[in-house]
Image (cartoon, rainbow, N blue to C red; front, side, top):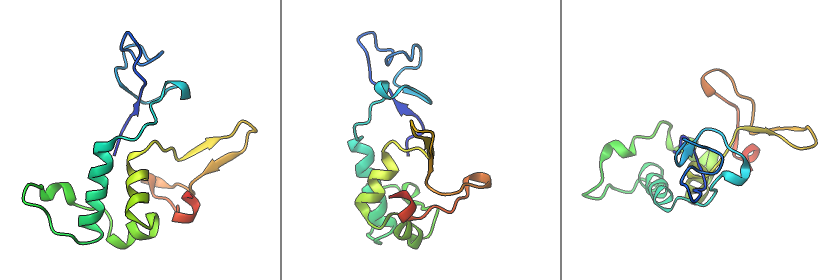
Length: 125
């Protein structure tokens, strides 16, 4: 749900060494990243799961356009297992792959064109 990294604000408001980047950026050193959960986004993700996966009805003040799943509900269950795992992964910091200090490559699965991939719940754990 988040398209950018949240930077830790500094006294001058630039987000560490991210001068001019404001509070969002697309790259940062680990020490400059705010990894705390976004409570509002967590609540939205939990509600998305309740409506789109569990089949709960919309409340009167909810917009149906906010609950248009890209995948069938079975996909969400297969990939995430439960509401809390979905909410945490959908709203938290994540990366597809990284290189460990020992030089070993880690990834969730193999990625193909247009971000199609073969990741599973087990490969993400």
